[in-house]
Amino acid sequence: MSAQAHIFRPDVECRAPEDQLRRDRAQYRKQLDYLFTRSAFHRRKLNDAGFTDAAACGELGDIAALPFTEKDEIRKSQGQHPPLGDHLAAPRETLVRIFSTSGTTGDPCYMPLTRNDLAMWTEISSRSYFATGIHPGMSVATTYGAGPFVAGAALETLSALGACHIPLGTGNTERLIRVLQLLAPQALMCTPSYAVYLAETLAGRGIAADKLGLERISVAGEPGGGEKQLRTRLELAFGVKLCEAMGIGDISISLWGECDEQQGMHFSGGDFVHVELIDPDSGRPVRIADGAEGELVYTALQREAAPMLRFRSRDHVICHTSACACGRTTMRVRCIGRTDDMFIVRGVNVFPSAVRSVVAEFVPRVSGALALRPLQRGVRQEPPLPLVVELARGAAQAADLAHEIEQAVRARLLVTTRVELVPFGSLPRSEYKIKLVDYSHAHANLVERI
Ligand SMILES: [Zn+2]
Image (cartoon, rainbow, N blue to C red; front, side):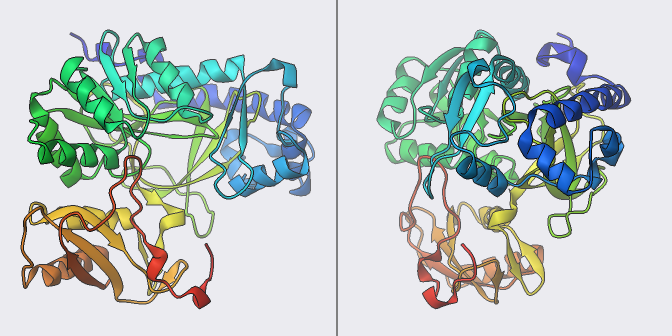
């Protein structure tokens, strides 16, 4: 079988990068014209920044001169121009879907899509999921809650791909276990946290997870699936290959997908989305090269209903641009964490997921569950950073273990922690995403920013 048999859209995903750039340049000009004509939101922002028309914005190579779009601006646009905001750039009657966010901190954000937008999401997600090993003819159990959320479109992609979809939704572990035993799906799609939770639940019941017939786990929804220790542990527990995918609701449900080489997630949005890398502090562009690190910024090249220009993702990644043995020529990334979750401890950036990665090296002496418990709210923290680490099932307190973990975190991340070991099962488990930071011990009078 040729390598390209494992690629959903070889003509796009194996294209020479210069060829892609040439196409993107042309599409970008069209999109800028569209924004100036149809989007009051982007026209106003660009005018305010001194760009009177599309021509004044220059070429794709000049994009770094244009203002970013922040999620808060989209929220504000919706509040000031209800119901969908003045970033809505397509007539209401052309919309075929309106998704919304959970809205836990106020009104939900609505995400409108035209027929072309929805078809584009399906195409991009198909490339991404296909890369993670979800192929036509496979049966796939999923644990994502659809409801009003964009996850619904992600799940529709499975039918478009020709896979047999077995939807379970969130919080249905009993049903999932029966499905794994009776229907024996070849693939499972879930968050990394849930895969850990499921592995522990199965082990606790004496069910051999590696005898269920699973061949693949495709994880998404949070960073962690790319962490070596976590991946190896889950691959061994379930007897599968585990690859990760990543999306962002305002751009595309799934936008990156990791191939069998497991060296980062390939960009799957070719022709539809332009990617930049920036320094999250200064906002300055970072050249995309092997090992380059920064925040991903996206520009939609063909979006109709809610097009985004230089949208800040807050996802902090490391890039890989060297040739991949799978044959795809697209860049790869590994997400380290959300810049929103990042701490700065005496000038050093610390991502909770990076701390988890270090603690994972101590499995099987620890369970892998942990919580950072800062003593004050906010980005800036004073050392030592309190870190609660859960021991493995049945493990006794070990005198040196806490110290060893402190040393390892210090050596790898240059941050001082104070480790407290707690018995197995003390920390909360999640069926969706685990919160690595627990502010319940923070001083209320030191609220800097939430
Ligand atoms: Zn690859």
